Length: 220
Image 1: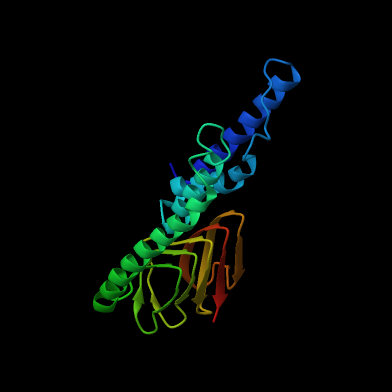
Image 2: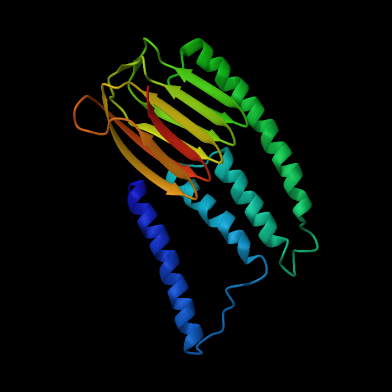
């Protein structure tokens, strides 16, 4: 199942569930309070859960999911006295430590093998393909900034070019002779294009998913 189909099913099921609950309340079949203690944490949990399934787990959506669950559990009667929002800070510290280690290992690999694809968390990362071949790849950015410069690249796409952005910003620079095909899933984010989207030019297909962040494609 592709990501767009899953997105439709995901949000469709949520809307149906909401409608069933409201109908049951109106017909006095049950009395479900939608504004339960900690209900607002659903605005954190649901988008992060959605991106875990559609884009795959990464630093941003997993941490957001954990933070949302911790906040929700802190509002329950049985676990509220044992779980506190104060746990969020230690969790963030642990995730930052893991991210630093992973980023260091990945940067060393990229230095030796070339930046075929990239990932950054709590940092700024630039990928410049000037004079280099580019055939696609997966790029992930969470709680950071990433720039992918293809303005001087030798573009011959043979595999998907996928950009995942959560709680961050990604800029993709493309040359003027490229015809960009854009496919995007946005949840509480922004997806902007300032480039050639006609059918004239070297084809380049970009699949972008954005949650609480921004993905921008710019002609350079």
